[in-house]
Image 1 (cartoon, rainbow, N blue to C red):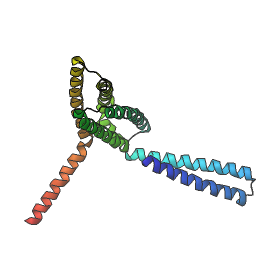
Image 2: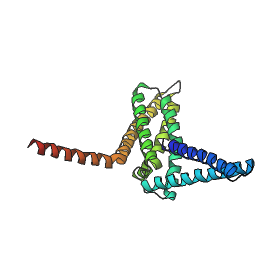
Image 3: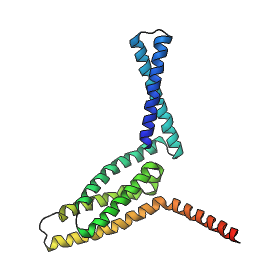
Image 4: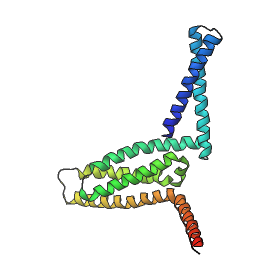
Length: 207
């Protein structure tokens, strides 16, 4: 949403600037039509990229990030987005009754972690293991599990492998639950503090 709004803002300001520059150049300075158009487009480009630079710098300052850090985090998030799409595809193809609820919950938690990090990129550092290890493990195991689970015939060995894989998925689900807690820990602590203050205030008023 932030990206779309910034793009809309830049485009609107640049479009308005093009019209103003063209009118000033053509009517104010009596420049030829083509030259006025070229100057207007150049002016619009300057406004577009100028606003982009300002909004980006402001965003980085709000998140206490350098351009290098933001580029690094953004690259990791782009890769994670691709992995999450693959994870969603594999988990949704596993249609065993015992795994449907768990798989939906895994997708919910993974998507929540990704969404929070995308909105507040500095929180990436709170869940680096998720992006460097846990998500990769989930993806690899879920794709193999989906492939094996959808085989038409299953012998004893295959059934045992599926059971072990299901247990591993359950353990990984607990790991990413902890990842979600880690990224929200400060918010939870802050909420607890606010609740404690509110309770003290209520008790004081009662007395």
